[in-house]
Length: 91
Length: 138
Image (tube, rainbow over the protein chains, first blue to last red):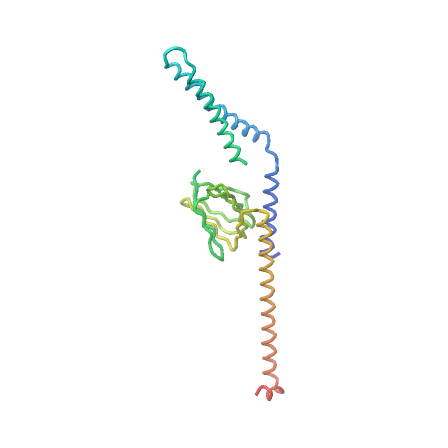
């Protein structure tokens, strides 16, 4: 076998191996990490917004939930944006 | 994401990529990857496919006939006899096969020409040595 044939054969084998690996479904641990990351990306900004909003409202005179509601909504939007960006990057 | 400089050298020239995120290749022990800031290393690559991702997220594929790899000072240098670059794995194999077939055909043609020259040379030498043809040569 010449070097040229060896190169074509080895490259073909590597490409096939790569394609098989990419087609394989993710394992349980992989899915767990992926799902966990998505959950965290969505939830962390919402919870952070809620806490920050609650603290800002406590500083205001009288009863107020303006900051809490606004920052929770902002957190939800930010979480959705994070999740979309993460999925786009991964695919 | 941090990047590093990649230089692919072969007998025909060099291909340079100033910002590469990761490089994946294989040596005798198996497949390995390199990220920016990796410790200095040297490896002897095996025949086959290497791949790397540039700063725009685009993957490049390179078929390599073995070679050596050196990473130092955030600069990766891969020296091979021949490498073939492509953005698509499927077409890379087709291009590679076509290029190899072309090379084989060029070599076969060169060999045939060489044999023809040799035969012609021997014929002329035979003519020179043959006393019967002396008159015709003069």
